[in-house]
Length: 121
Image 1 (cartoon, one colour):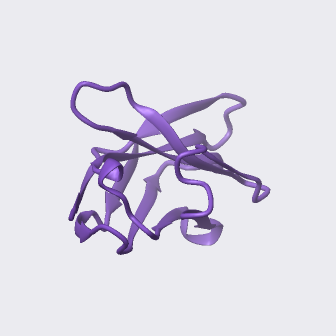
Image 2 (cartoon, rainbow, N blue to C red):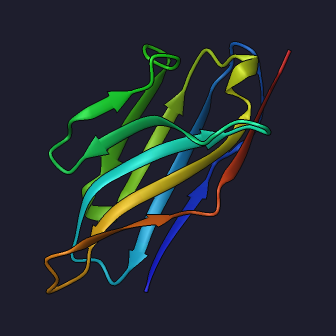
């Protein structure tokens, strides 16, 4: 069993900051990638940022230079620092972890339940 739990969402004003955390726990052999996605009503879930075990990062164009993804591999945790927030950043933010179980050669994707971010003017 693997659990992925996000925290840190809430309300912020435009131009403000929030920091999201995501922790994976359970039967974990290796985490290959952790990523943040978001979805607002009427839209498809989109990739916001991702980070690999080696530390390579990738960002959606809409958040480049404003959001920063980082990880603490020892704690199976990833963070999303969101600065200069905009109204359009309002969404439910989901964490996804690509995890290989102990002794397995396969990895599976595990999603968290999501955390709401609301940006107001």
